[in-house]
Image 1 (cartoon, helix red, strand yellow):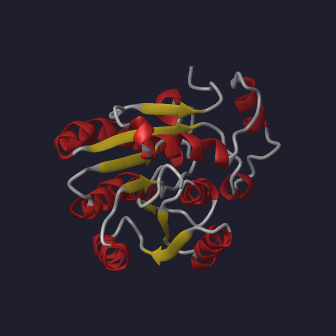
Image 2 (cartoon, one colour; image 1 turned 90 degrees about the vertical axis):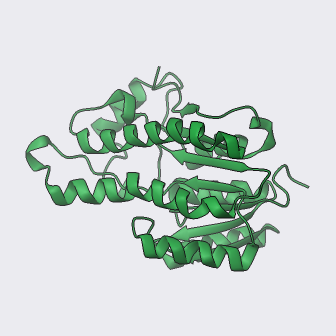
Length: 250
C-alpha cells in the first residue's frame, strides 16, 4: 500500500510534461488520479494507460480550467466517479516570453485566465468535494515569480499571483484542514520546453550556469516534492513554497 492509498487526486493540465509526471507519481504512491486535459485527449489517455499498466487507477477528463462551466462539469464527473477529492494539483498553465512592446490585452488575458483564474476556479470547484478530514492543494508556480527574468513580465506576474493565492488560501482553508502549498520549478525539459526552442540554446546555457546542481530539471524532479506535499508526511506544512529548481532560486 502506497502512502496515498485510498486518496483521490485531481491533476490539472496533466496530459504531458510536469503534469503527466505528477499524475504518474501520485498513482504510483497509491492515489486514484484524474488526469485533466484542455486539448490533448490523446496525451491524457496515454498517461492513463501508463498508470493502468503499472497497476494504478486513473481516468482522463477534459476541461479548460479558465472556464467556469468546464470546471463545474469536471468536478461533477469526479464526484460521480470517485465521490470525493483529497488532493488537487493546480498544474495547468501557459507561458510566453514577451518583450514589453509586444504585450497585448489578449496575451495578458490568455496568461492570467489560465495561470491565475484557473487556479481559483479549480480550487473553488474542488472545495465542496474535500472530506471533513481535509486534504491537500498544491499549486505549481515558477522561480520566475522571484527571479523575474527580462521579457517575462506577464509570466512572472502571473506566477507571483499564484504564490500569493497559495499563502492566502492556506490561511483561509486551514480551519477546514485543507493544506495549501506551492512548488516552483526552475528550468524543466518538457515537450513545451523543446518546442519553444529552449533546448541547447543560450537561454538554457545561462539557466544551467545559475543552477548550483548544474543541469536542466526533469518532470520527475517536480513530481517528488508534489507527492510529499500531497501526503500525510507533510501534515504540518501549509502556506509554503518549495523551490524545485536545483538551487536556481537561491
